[in-house]
Every structure is written in structure tokens, then in C-alpha cells.
Amino acid sequence: MIKDVVIVGGGPNGLMLACELALAGARPVILESLPAPSTEPKANGLLGQVVRMIDRRGLYERLSGTPGPPQPNSAYFMFAAMGLNLSLLEDSPVYGLPAPQHRIVQVLEERATELGVEIRRGHKLVGLSQDDEVTLDVADMDRAYRLRARYVVGADGAHSITRKLSGINFPGITYDRRTNRTAHATVPTEWVEPETGALSVPGYGTILPFLPHRTEHGGFSYAPFPGHPPLVSTTEWDQPRTEAPMSLDELRASIRRVLGADLPLGPPTGEGPHVLRRLSGGNTRVAERFRDRRVFLVGDAAHVYTSGGGPGLNLGLQDAINLGWKLAAEIRGSAPPGLLDSYETERRQAAHRMVMYAQAQAALTAPGSDVTALRELFNELLGHRNTVQHLADLTAGTDIRYDMGCHHTHPLVGRFAPDMELHTPTGAVRLTELTRTARPLLLDLTEDASVAGALSEWHDQVDIVTAQPQPTAPAATALLLRPDCYVAWASASSRPDSADLDALRAAMQRWFRPTETPTAGEETQRDLNLIEPSIT
Image (tube, rainbow, N blue to C red; front, side):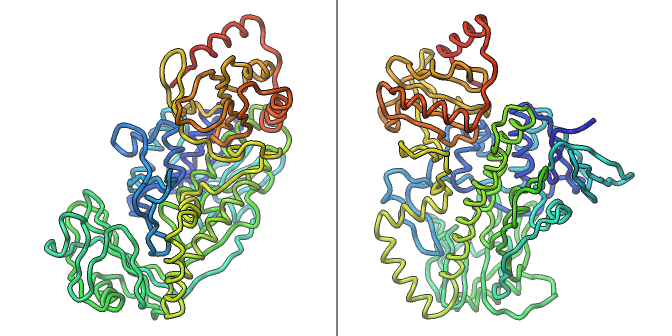
């Protein structure tokens, strides 16, 4: 039996893609080489726009363990170990969701299983060829076998075998100057300020928690995650390479060089796994293409850069969300020409922004008096709201504006749809609750619901909701959202004219192929749906 999509890699990106495909009616299979989910400590949470996207798929409360929607960080954040005063902004785009990567994988795997996704653990891709379909050679513990699939997606990390077997080059640069040392460890309790959680190091001073700290000799961070021993980390330049196992003594010596003061570290307490690692060098690379015919790349298989963790997952998970609905539409036969090509166009733009973000921070945290002078200048600029807004948007990934194929007549077109609350005949509803099904969505907020009738031939392709916005909603009277929640069309007119409606139809034709006109019975059911939108 030919599979719709085989996803190579069962990490967060592969699982997210599988969920998106399943929501859209495709039948994905995940091949994961590990026999069980990894417990190796990696990222410590999600950061940026993807936190809101996770909420729009109904997964935020599962991951956070708390009720209610995500809240932005509206006080303080960092860029290159310099403070971003987010209180200067009217609306901070920096959202955070603390959650270890193994918990993210667990929640996404649970959701994928609920949606009927087949996950094959301990199955490794060893060969791949393409014709009208894709043939995969797979090996598990006991046998070798072949799979046929319409499409394959490599979500198998920076050393992607999918990318290599597809002949896709991975150009970029390798940094060999930096050494990062990280460990879970205990610190003297009397050195921790109970009010702020800051670490007060005698002979050096106060270091705020969770925020990178730069000195003339390197970088230091102290992260006391709840329920875990603190995560202590240093960064140094031009350290001699060693093959010796990493140890707490090595980290203590590194801290002494970076801070010029001693920090007594004890072994971690509680259940593991505990981090104790040294990373020398790093890579910043972007695949020469994100697609080779029927093979696609997402996440680290497509791009790696030296600042991983939350921003890296932000980028990779949004790759998956961007590709999922497009690939499912192609499988259903409802994709307009060029839809799959837009994946690389849009996500390469995002990848290059994140690479620039990582490289700029690396340059600004390097040692040396010249860098210190540059940081002094940057700190002056960070007193300006526009500078903080620009860097906050870059950090969160909200600076991305996709080309929707038309003149941007509304400021929201091409942007990620803002959060809003709507008044419907059945009561107040958040936009988030209307996006759980991963379908296109038309919000008709006009007084006479005049926009909904313009899409008669697309009614089975798009969910249509007529409502009234809250006073705090953005200045728009109608919005067309793609399944990834980017705005494909918007109007600010209380009575959209024929030109507005023609632009709406053009946006529909660009992103969604029209289907046959529904029957009279279907029209009646659709009218009911306009009055009482389905919320799942």
C-alpha cells in the first residue's frame, strides 16, 4: 500500500508535521530510528510565535499544565546578553513556554496517536529513490523492508540521512572558536537571593537567573528551572580541544576564568537525566534547497544555527505547520499550482532571518574591548522603543511577512493573525478556538455579513464565521486565514466593495482550489454553520 507521506524523524518537528497532515485528512507514517523517545536534555521550552500557534491547535494547556491562554513576556528579555525592556512595547510578541524537549515530544506524540498517526520506532531509513513516487529502504531490529510513498519529509536533524540520500548540499560555515560547557549542578543556597532568584557571587556580583551574562572573557548563565537542579553554563573562545570526559571540575575552572571568581558547584540532586556536556564549535548552515521533487526538509534537516533551543524549535515547528496543510492539499488534489513551491520560498526567508539573528548575537557576545564598545552603543539604542520592537519581533519570528501574491492593501496581509476575541450568536469565542481544525478560515466581521456570500464555490474549502469583534480587536472587517494562521486577505471597509471581493476571490484562487457548487441541502447546512460555528 502506498503511503501518503513518510516522515523520517519522530522529534518535535516530525510529530508536529504528522499532526498537521492528519488534521487535513492525510495518512502520515513516522519512521524514528530510536527505539524509545530520547530522555537526553535538549531544549528547555518553546519561544516566540510558535507558542501562540501551539495554543491555536489546542496544545498549550497540555504542555504548560496551566489553564488559560499564553501570556507574553512583557517585562524583560535579552538579546546578545543585553537587556530588552519589553515594558516599552504596547504588545510584546515574546511568548515563552518552559517545557523540556522530552515533554514536548510526549505531548505531540500523544496528539499524533489520537489523530491516528502510525509511528514506527526503531525503524531507520537506509535508502531512498524517486520516480513517480518515493521508494524507501528501511531497516529495523529484525529485518529490512521497502515502503512506497507519495511524499517523504526529512525531519531527522542536522545530520539528516534524508537530505544526504536526496543529494541536497548543506552549505554554511563551521565555528571552531567557541566552547560551551553546561551542567546541572547545585549552588550554595545562601548565594541565591530569595526575592529575585538571582545568584550573588562573592568577588563578582549579582547575576540574574535565566539571562545570559557576558564578560570580557566569555559568557555565563544560571537557569534554576522549577523542579530541576539549576542549569549552569559557560561559553569561552579559543579553548584547547580535549577528548577527556566533561566534569564539574572543568566547569568550575571555566567559571573562574569567565567571572574571575569561584562558584562552588555540587552534584545535581533528584532524578535525571542530568546534563553534563561540552560542545566545541558549532555550525550555521542552510540547505541549498528545501525540496527535491517529492522529498522535503524541515527543521534542523533544512537549517542549523548556533543559537538553538527555543528559537530553533520556533523555526522548525513553524516549518512543519507551513508544509503540512500544503502537502495535504496536494494529496487531496485541491492544491492550486505552485502551492508546494511556496513552502521553500516562505520558510527560507524565515531561516535566513534566524541565521542572521544567531550570527549577530555571536558577534556581540565575543570577548574583546572592541566588542565591548559596540555593546555600549547597542545599549544606547536599546533605550529606544522602535529598536526594542524590532529585536523583539526578530526574536519571536513575528517580523516575517509572506508575499501573498497581491499588493498589501491591509497591514495584516502576509502577517500571522493577531489574537482576538469575537462575539458570535452563541457567545464570545477566541480566534484560537476557531483554528483547532487547521482549515482555512474566513472571518466576516461586517455589519451585514456581506463577505461570506462572495465565496459560494469555496464553501467546502473554508470555514466561514460571522461575528462582531471586541473593541480591542485589530482594525479589520474581514480576514481570510490560511491553515497556518497567516492572513491571506483582509479588508478594513465596513462595506467591502467589488474590488475588495475580487481581491478575496483572487486570494482564494491562489491558495485554495475551488470545488463543485454544493447542493441546496448543503447550502442549508452551511447557512447553519455560519450562524453557529463549530468549535472543537
